[in-house]
Image: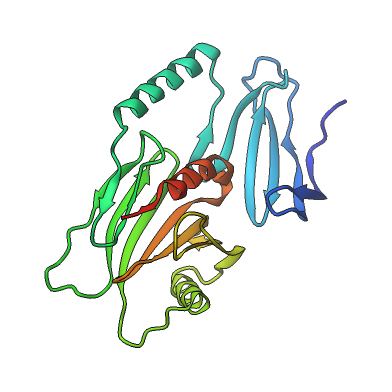
Length: 249
């Protein structure tokens, strides 16, 4: 059946949200040139203001996919994929035991993969307030995890609802369109810890953020794990591994 050019308004089931969502999808260009020298079949999928683009040749083979701005996925042969997997496994084996321990905050966690690097933030001797302890980043996934330490202040509210309101209010200062994707939920096996999933625009990019809050005897740890919303399905497994690696000291 020949492909038509044009986006259609559709309603589809989003398995992540477990609800019907509105999308616009279709081809913006097609060509019958089998050589591939002319622009190929370009399929667009719009959801929540984000656009995913897949490029096909005239033989219906995938040429590449744009997951988000600046993030492209390219098909590779079996030998290339196996070589990459072997190298990643080797790097992962060499990286075992690289758990990050933050004694002041009373928590520890492990990188979710060999490409994640931890950069600690030097503490200022005169800084007795909240501060950033460090950042775990993956440049390939354009994803990072920022770890903050917030000492308890006299008379400060410690209830989960109040802390959530404070956190959302603070993040909306830099992302005014911030909204909650999944409601607050407790983290199994971590006493006094909960997670909140959010989405918003940061520097003109749509970003998904997983906020993890952990109450400790002397203060509160806030972990902000963020990645491009357009590539969230590729980013999410690493985020899940990171959260599951968190343990209390």
